[in-house]
Image 1 (cartoon, rainbow, N blue to C red):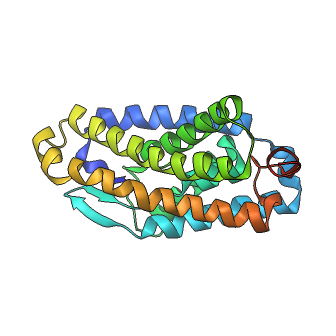
Image 2 (image 1 turned 60 degrees about the horizontal axis):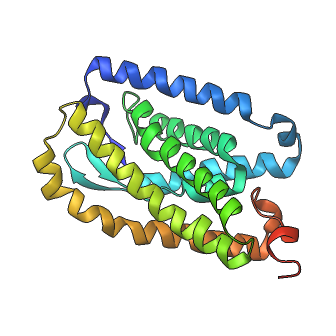
Amino acid sequence: MELTGELLSLGARRAFWVAYVLALGLAAWLAPWRHLREGLRLHLLAGAAVGLMILWSLRTAVLPGLEFHLLGMTTATLMLGWSLAVLAGSVALVGLAIAGLSGWSGLPVNALLDVLVPATVTQSLLVLARSALPKHFFVYVFVNAFVAGGIAVLAAGYVAVWVLVGADALQLEDLRQGFLPFLPLMLFPEAFLNGFLMSVMVGLRPEWVHSFRDEEYLHGK
């Protein structure tokens, strides 16, 4: 999702800036910085940021001030962990703003929709799946990547509706006609993207995926 910052009042934008800075501070505090000394982890972080920036630049307008694009944050979260995924997404948003593809005023609310919500949904489902489901390759790909990706985009979409209606930026009736009916259609492309990327990576480059271990998901299965 992509919201134009001008849709929100100055007070709302300031509130989102405060919330975003706090979340970013938490991510920076939890981030495993010592692991970034390894060339692989640093390269993966940079690659994820560039990949997200490219993905988020491909968008389509849904309503005035509201655009849709694929998120890809489920893949970033499974690859890097929650904290580094939030940092990678933040770098991607800053890159889009510098390139003139997004406005600075909308950066914090878009960080909520594009970064924090999908990363948190993915991490939460990963924890639940590990505790409730057998550790198996197909469970990991289907539940933690495919299903989590679909739920993440739905969650981001409904949070966007809540923000827009709560800020009196758009009327709920307009969203019911021009956005909400199409939101379920966004589920499968997002789910397929993340499911495909993770199935390729855990099959060919499992060392790239922070949340995947051969010993847990493959050996002896």
